[in-house]
Image (cartoon, rainbow, N blue to C red; front, side):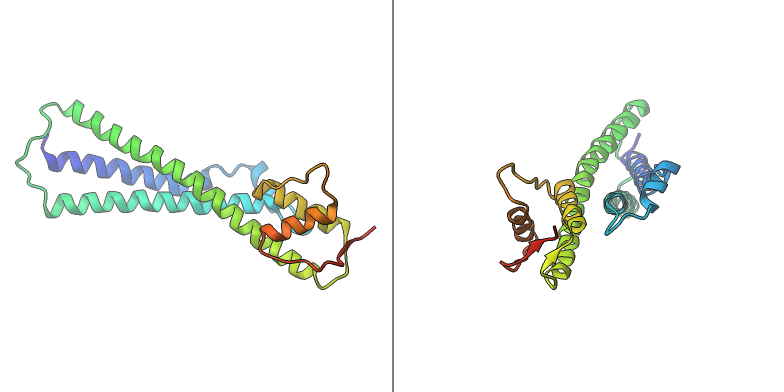
Length: 190
């Protein structure tokens, strides 16, 4: 098998993986997941934060895989000599192309997980900042809003209230994590 054929197989595999990865999130939508995402939840919908962060990460990775495939294909057409034989066995060439594509794919999955987690954190910080800015205009914070902030900070920022920490101190710590400062006289609604 010559070098052009090998690159063609590799780019085809990467293009197919990229396309599947872009569509993966849509294929994973089950009726239960759609119901959770679309459910009305007071204040915010954490399922939507997760879902949209996941979609962003998977679409980004799928797009990168398709671009890599496109670049390989263009290089193959433009500069690859057709007379260089790199594999005498086509089966071995196909296996190596599959191995290279698999390594790139699994590397991209790890990057996708990092992108998804970081996106969720950024969105959670924005959500917390928005809520805190709204709440700072009040003197007393409704208990439901406090619980909502606790939930988001725990789920996406991995901030938990310590046993020895008062609710107000915890709220100040959440605000600090979101680069916000709360008034000293702020109180929770009784």
